[in-house]
Image (cartoon, rainbow, N blue to C red):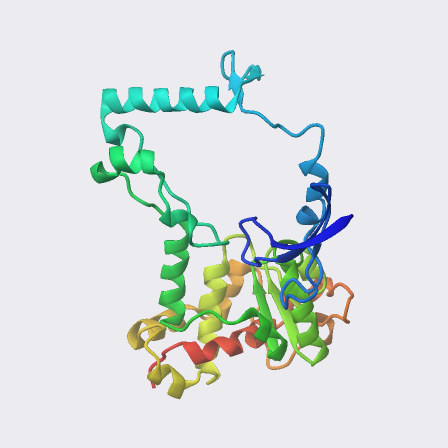
Length: 318
């Protein structure tokens, strides 16, 4: 008898999908997205859709493998879990005896899929070495948090489900169709309501092919484009000054004025490869729904359009 078990995806992914697993006699037959979950929406990504195949694959590695030759030769032999764990413990003990607790620093990683893991350090390591310098370490998250706080202040992130209410969706350096597939149906719903999708990235990604506007910036010039957009916000009076006065985030008045004076369209256009925006959009810059944008989108004035929603979060001088 086939059972359907509701479970969750364990991959390091912010979608945190709800899954339905079809199981018969303890064997996984199929995985599919839960149709009752608002973000999963009944489908799973290409990786998870095929997981039942590698779970029971005859090529799956089921035991620890120990290297038996010099590095690079690729010679390994299967060992039991007890043998593997005993050897790891013995080597750690030898390191601690020779170099003390700092001889093997521990780095912890907090995944996007939960907060329980980083709060549960291995007791065998904690009792011996935590008090002597073993610390939790996070690298990617603090950098992202610092950038967010500098740009947006204390405002939290947006609920992804509210994208359907957007008038303009900007995908900056994110190939949504490849890396965030569950946001795409919501983007399409927003476009059905009249929203436009602006994609900013150098390559012709799957998402860029389906965008209404594609700004093909030169590689590594995103900061110059952002400064140019700030210039347009100030020059054309697109900033929400009242909201920026009430908030505690954004750029300081003096620095914003200096940045914008230095980021005239002529300067950032030469750096980014995107032509300065004009007063009206060129018809050749738009794309029909579901069809690739024109190649001339590189020269289109979408920078002004893309800049508009950022105005409410930047604190510019009156």
